[in-house]
Every structure is written in structure tokens, then in C-alpha cells.
Image (tube, rainbow, N blue to C red; front, side, top):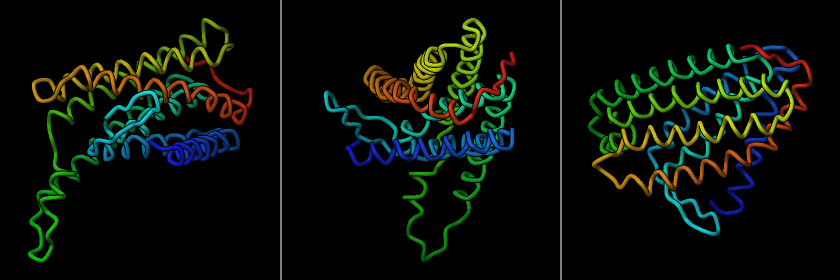
Length: 233
């Protein structure tokens, strides 16, 4: 990821999450945050079909392009958890899961439709959007476990710190959840196919860096949300 792409990525995070927080503050509803969350999850699923190079300056890693989007979903779960509480966060995760199942179903259906004789991209389409049951299963299990774990830890930290130390509940919920996602997804999806350890290390490092970068954005969103937040367990 070069410097320009990094700047564009930061602008994207800032714009979309702050807009969602502004909506939540103005209307006291989580609709837009949930919509953004579902969008980010679905986009990450599609981008995961591309293996990208992440040049961090000190070392270069490879991994699914969707990591740069998926890692930000934990910021959105923390924002919703901060404003509306854990129950609303779990509801959002469930909505995103059903949306993933629906997307995969219709991709599979569209892929199975016979291609027109003059349309020559069927093989390319199959390579990108063809259903790989093992990877799909790994993705769903990792998603449900990691995202719900993040919601539980964030809410627990908020309770024991009495709503203080936002950076602590943001970092200490996101970083373990991101590691858990990788440790579940990689072995289920690629054991016996690809070398596991390099994939685990590469994904973990990139995800953790993004998780740490998310912390100041969490504070920005907390400022927009205001002090009227929930502590629903």
C-alpha cells in the first residue's frame, strides 16, 4: 500500500465513520452505521478474492485485499457498542451475517446461469465469484466468533473502567478479536493447501497495525457521538 493509497484509505475511514456517527447523534438511530457495517463486510468478502501486497516500509506482507476493509468493521462495531450498547451490536453482526449468506447465494445462482455465447468472461467470473465452500465456511465461522468476541470484550471493558479509557476498550477488544479471526480463518480455509504460518503472521501484522490506527478515529467518532452513550450489557 503506497502513501497515496494510505491517505485515501484514511480519508475513507474518516468520512464514512464520522458520517455514520453524525447520523447516530442526530437521529439517535444506528441505521446508517449498520448499513455501512454491512457494506464493509460484503465489500471485504469480494475483495478477499484478490491477494495483495502490503508494503509497510520495514517489511512486505501478502494477504487478501479485503483486510483493509474488514479490519475497519471492528471500529464500526465499537462505535455502535459505545453509542447503543452490546445488544444493538450483536443485532448488527447478525444482520451482516444474513447479508453475507444472501450475497453468496445469489453469486452462486448467477454463476450457475448459462453464459451467453458472445460473453467470453465466464471463466474469469468463475475464478473470482465462484463459491469455494471451505473458504466460505471458514469466513463465516471466523466472522461470527471474532466480531461477537469484540462486542463482548468492548462492553466488559467499558463496564469495569466505568466508561473511561476509551483507547483501552477499543484496542483491547479489537486486537484480540482480529487475531482470533485470523487463527480461525486461515487453518480452516488453507490447511493442506498453502503454508499456514506466513499467512497467519502476515494477516495478523497488517490487521493489528490497522487496529492501532483505528484508535484516533474512535476518539473522533466519540466526539461526534457526544456523551449520550449506553452501557447496555
